Length: 168
Length: 168
DNA sequence: AGTTTATGTCAGCCTTGTTGACTTTCCAAG
DNA sequence: CTTGGAAAGTCAACAAGGCTGACATAAACT
Figure (spheres, rainbow over the protein chains, first blue to last red):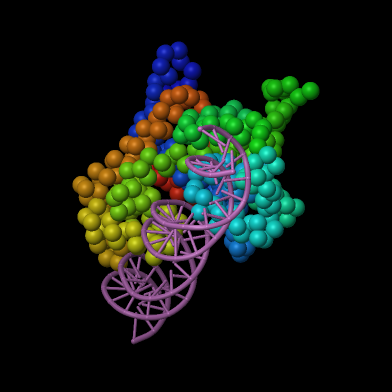
């Protein structure tokens, strides 16, 4: 019953049952724990946490981005971000240059030290993902990305797509 | 150079580039926020949070499970779980029956009230996932699940697979 | 009888999120 | 040139949900 896929009509819709959706939910939960496990392991012992990782990631991703941009991407309050950013700047991982056009803005850059940590964290996280990708092949990876994108809130999807292109 | 895909040999491996892996990481991050957004919305205002949702979910999923089992699935300390479980029991959402064979164990069940809340939360979360699944089709969903499963820690993958079957 | 297991609980700490209030700096429009 | 609003920073207080360590009880196992 329910041969893999590819009939003509409505695809049998067996993949939309309550049970299948539950499995998807659980898969998402367990996989996310794996997803964060490796960087968390590196961070513990340092004075940093997952929030610092996220800041480093997105500053690396959009060099010279402003605080406001970062707030929009991360979806936290400026007080919450500031606590994290403060320590990263004080510890010399992030540099905040006064904006050239608009001097109210701060353009954020990773220092050498910041880049080094970001690289370590990303390497760890990518290693797991690379192994998973390799294990399942490009076809499955494409499906993975499609489903994730379809699950995002529209605002976040826009943020996500903006990142894929270039741009600070 | 580097035409799309599908040569004979090793699939060109373009899907394993740093950039592709980074996109995957970001997709995971943004999608997870969407994944939790709807139940969180329901919970806020009640005295409960995401931790209560998880407990309700897995108690529903494995009726009569023990505290120890739940601890293993959730991967938190008993003190942390107890805080959550305590309120759920006191509020009459969860019933803890003394084990029949081993009286040290507590078998956990949802009450009517607990089931009702669990259903609301799951409905909200499933709605988003159903929409996403429907938008991308069964082929993509299969890939989605494959990648997630490949990303899990081995222990968690075992937990996950155990849930798929039956069993308390 | 003594040990181990399952559970519960007290106390205290940390990270990371929140709100609210207030300041400084600076751009831009009137 | 003044004034309103935007960008950023900061202080204080609080909440959720993790954590550790210590200790208590009941039941099972040896």
